[in-house]
Image (cartoon, rainbow, N blue to C red; front, side, top):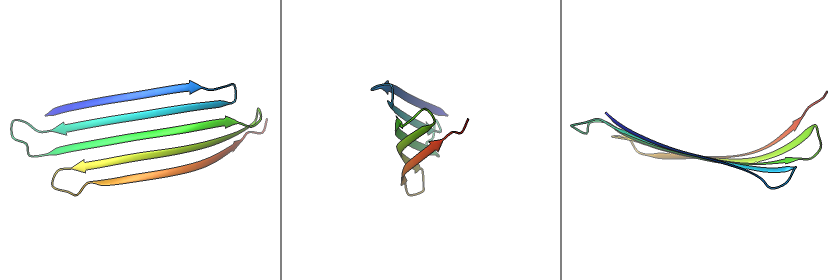
Length: 89
């Protein structure tokens, strides 16, 4: 079996209250010497965090996934989320 994987992670603070995180993954697998089974996956996500106060954070994120498995139709998934975190101390 041959497997190839690549990953990327980037984090950047624009200021003390705004942060961006980006993550990406790619995977490719196939059987050898005869190509009987093959998979390919791509995952990517981005999250933007904004600290409103010390105890309240607002996050906006988007995640994309692509799946391709031999002998099956490929499919994509896209998810967008808005999250509010409040911490009581």
